[in-house]
Image (cartoon, rainbow, N blue to C red; front, side, top):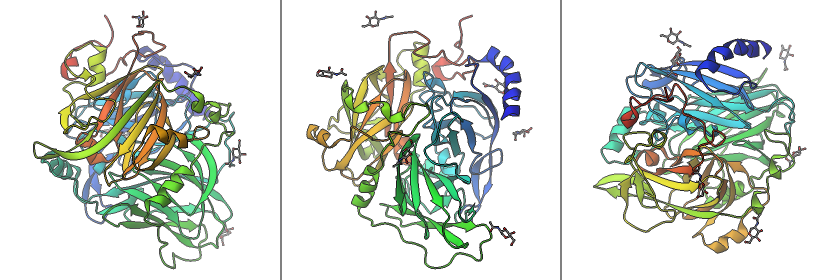
Length: 541
Ligand SMILES: *[C@@H]1O[C@H](CO)[C@@H](O)[C@H](O)[C@H]1NC(C)=O
Ligand SMILES: *[C@@H]1O[C@H](CO)[C@@H](O)[C@H](O)[C@H]1NC(C)=O
Ligand SMILES: *[C@@H]1O[C@H](CO)[C@@H](O)[C@H](O)[C@H]1NC(C)=O
Ligand SMILES: *[C@@H]1O[C@H](CO)[C@@H](O)[C@H](O)[C@H]1NC(C)=O
Ligand SMILES: *[C@@H]1O[C@H](CO)[C@@H](O)[C@H](O)[C@H]1NC(C)=O
Ligand SMILES: *[C@@H]1O[C@H](CO)[C@@H](O)[C@H](O)[C@H]1NC(C)=O
């Protein structure tokens, strides 16, 4: 730590000339080469997207308030961007790394992301956001540890592992993209990976010790159930919130979500199956890895433990049991639950209904009847440089409109500092998963059937978890509260990767007429410019 910090200090002087940065907080520097390379996750050779030669990419280790300086060299033959699931980037949507905020890094070029994990703790991940790159890798874990002065509500584990799980295809990302571009649906996946392996991923533990597993579903569509033979798991964290510690035999992890569990190695020193299986999917897929005790006296034995009941209710009940520990500290010394979200007046209710259908005989997906199409210029840059005609505010309604699906560059405007209720209404027979960039939100309720104002009576206004990705069960609704306290252009998207690719996403423009730097940062000096923003200056001369 000490050497890192002084190394960083020496570089800060150079960097601060280039970038506007906060001086006190430590720096971590990353140099990342993004390349194609051969991988064999399901036994056949595939072209993977590697970061510094690795699939999955390296973990980012950080501590609350660290500055992360990540220089990404795109050595692919097509434009590339990374995005950061759950990293908040306050007042700075320019570096969010999605097509509506950030220009793609051209082949052969590099771009340095300057992020700060300000007031955050917990388990997140990064992923490639453009085209269908996520089907080829390019993702990795992000962990933000509490600073040493702030207590964590459980003893330090003896081991701390990133466990990236996800469905996987033998087809290349370019094949899958070509199928979607031609108007087809995404086929069913071929398998499930644990940390990039179709089988045999191994985690080590000493008998009598506890390990922490940071589980993220980085796949393209399937909800997954995670379990370990003969072991219980204690849930401790969900996307930056310390939870009430509940003991689980298995955990449902919906696409895009992250959870931390503790596993206490209290069994005889053997190998145990670590199992991940698909949920609510027509392809019943299972993969196994191994929890191996040090000095294990033998391999895995006995049947692979089966999953929980397939009924939605089991999963819904588990989701509702996940609550904040109101006395545990978060990123700051005051208890994170002391934010009384339940007693703030709602300034606006937004209802979002998802739909699948065809537009011009091609498969598309929509929110409130609009199927998103990208513009020729990142929306955030159009705003910044006041370029007209890139998108229209109000191109998506804040309620379902019951119209036939149509294409547009959908942007919903909300006032800065509004405290908003968003109800996700899923009348389809699939399990939906929504993610909002730039904010964490309280999951106040979810249930089957149609949402109505009466549904508010069943909201949890005391100890809901704050997170950034939430599931909506088939023919069900999920309600969230969100404080829109981060000015910028923020992507709200389905985490079903084919659905978001084919239009199930839009941007939330959190707007103020203030031009104060306290409300929104200037565009980074090194921002890449593209589309109609090409040739503009990031700073006045
Ligand atoms: C990235 O690739 C370049 C060129 O191949 C190489 O010189 C450099 O050392 C690589 N950096 C890392 C961190 O792998
Ligand atoms: C590309 O990397 C160089 C250092 O190798 C850095 O000076 C430059 O700012 C980077 N480019 C961008 C756009 O961030
Ligand atoms: C593992 O076995 C070695 C050699 O038998 C022994 O020295 C060591 O204490 C054992 N470790 C544990 C954790 O049991
Ligand atoms: C909540 O957090 C406190 C630490 O502030 C801890 O002592 C307690 O065990 C936690 N309770 C539960 C149920 O997780
Ligand atoms: C919320 O609204 C109610 C009724 O309009 C009002 O009485 C109350 O003062 C408001 N509370 C806050 C915190 O603004
Ligand atoms: C911003 O809008 C508010 C309310 O409409 C107005 O009172 C204020 O003068 C505006 N400020 C600026 C800087 O335009």
